[in-house]
Image (cartoon, rainbow, N blue to C red):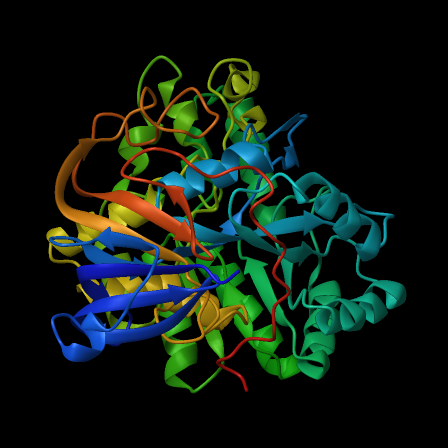
Length: 467
């Protein structure tokens, strides 16, 4: 039984085009597009017709950086794959790439299998995995080749968190050399964790225990230094590099310089760095703990450099680094010692809306919104054009977006499994109306109609900027 849907009369926006078009969906894929009102469009017939008049028709968002159920700091991220992917769907995101974790002493395969077990049968939308590599040795390097072959084509390393995820320069170089050969992409958390640990110890000894000191010890210069070092190690290895959650102007300058030299170096930032700042970390009565993440929030003046980086393409992707911890009982673990506050913010539901607000505010264009939130992450991580665009043959991951609707972001109305919103009370223009995942309606006119288990695991090809 073939199933057909037509979406009529919306403004279709992709990274490259805007056109008033009708979209024909057949068996979970985009079958055809035709300019609205033309004989070709009138010829589209289907059992289900969705009226998109007055709305944008955009590709489902691709969030290439989430941490569902991540163990961290003696607790776990509060969103499960079920709650987190449902919240993503509410926010117009139809694909996530989450991070499977290799613990020290464990094989990559054991870590990957554990994450498959967490996600399988529980996701409302499609998902893939990156692999966090915490223990580089000969066997790990061989396993990297096998993972690339089966569609896990990106590997994250940490210059931060000594004793947990940290890799030294030699381990990083070896993994980069391997990825240069096998086509994988190294994703780097670029902060000098060894130096930061010294500054943390000194701050605590001075009695500086409040959340705002989390931002003060994780200095922008130490992000820039690590970014520079990662770029040089990648250059030595002849490998591409993707730097995650870039937050500081000085780090962007390092990326821009490398790109000007023609190096395959890429960067992502996150909504929290674009919309929040150290002012939030300094909120009284321990409220600042809600905003503790790493890299940390920066002073407001860094935001202009981030927006400029997104416009000049020195930053290519906006992901969320969604890693929520409840204020009560989780963030509170760090009362009296900021270094014990679990690092992470909720955001998977807010990204598409906040970036539309950036369009309204004049920071980026509509097509750039789709580029940084849908198309580029899909290309960067080997899922395009199956994901990230509206074109014949693509998965029918489609969002009807109301650009005029107004909403107030709040923990009372969001669907993430966390007891606060990082954007509480923020008024924004634009809201998701209807969401299709592979042709199945998962949000219908602001009502959830999806189900756990609809989302399927998506193996990925290698980075499409390198082919």
